[in-house]
Image 1: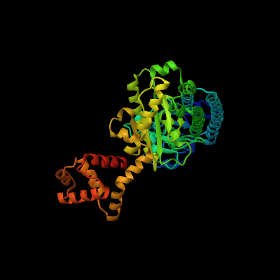
Image 2 (image 1 turned 45 degrees about the vertical axis):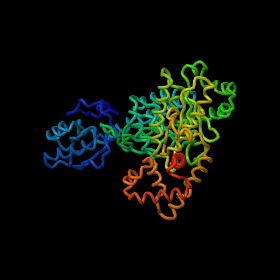
Image 3 (image 1 turned 45 degrees about the horizontal axis):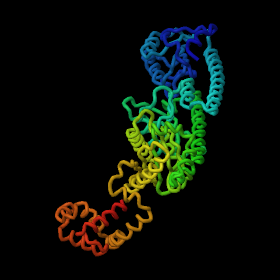
Image 4 (image 1 turned 180 degrees about the vertical axis):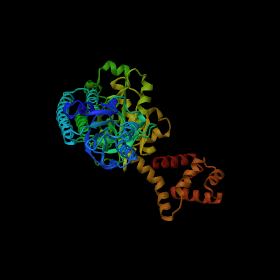
Length: 523
């Protein structure tokens, strides 16, 4: 209730002595006290009632009012049963912008309390009813296929809550009011991947230091690497019971929307299950029929589509996790994602109105940023992603899928917690390495470097690193020795051991290339 509603009750005979301009302030609760400094017992939003037993001298008024003001009290009701309200109390209330209301001697504090309780109870029942009606309506709309972002914005605005939904990659899903800046979303998503428990209240690393509370949107299929987060403005510790209920309402709406999206993605993946094999076998008519639900053929030809392939290493213990992570990574482009034999594959349209080459660059840039956000939650995993140039027809899609596979293999070779490689970047020996089957790579690497690695392990030597430095300095004895801070004779001895153990002559360009490629396969 508002202060004005309380003063409108004629039988109470209440009147403002100061602060009438704040009559619209909302009363959350009431508190009766005669303590001189009651702040530690207040939570904010209280209408304070006092008989002024705490006042033994004029200075006490300043002490009392500053205490309740610091705790967030909305108004002070002073009883006159023991005498008139002193001017020092009026001045203290005026100085601290606390409305002061006279409670005449014929009005008991019990009557005031009863009226506040009646109004708050009535408001509580009305709020519960409105919240439930709003919740049922929004849930029904989302279940019927309404746009989640629009439904969420409406529900949050009605509840008076500033809130956002972001994904585990920092992608902005929905918001009430202005969206979170991209850097804030990325920061929150990355932090959330390291939090063991929720909800979490944090201060955004922005200039204004906004405080937000983060809650997970957990579905049956939830995994921290592929989920949503609800971000609400403010500290949950200061929320009212109504605000907590409204936030819970928003969480349940988001859970429903997320569940529908996950179900649709799984259905699409099952529908497209045979696409990689059809493309590899060049059965383009069947592939086109399978993809008919992904958009009209003429749009395919004009805008083009990019193939994205991803793999997580080692293979996740959670079933289908790679597909779910890739689905989240390409979500903005409505990419259809399917699980292949060795990786997950997505076919995503080039952004509307963007030239194909530049569209591919935009997709790559976004993938790099989003994959980097996920790094904090990868823990024992790595994710390698490759994407192709734009294809403008189903026959071209086969070449795009092969190009994306080679790019993904190169991403695996280059290492890092996350790595994204575009097909256009494959223009060196790495293209050849990426196209070689893993078992061949492993055999080649072991045959050339195995003896060196075993020798280093048994003798605590540095033959492998010496070989790397020697090749990096193009076989220059002086420059390599200087870079390694060793004598040239020491370097010659080590390289001699390398040649002896590998059977390769490092004065031969051909043999240098053999060892160089083996080292690259080890990176």
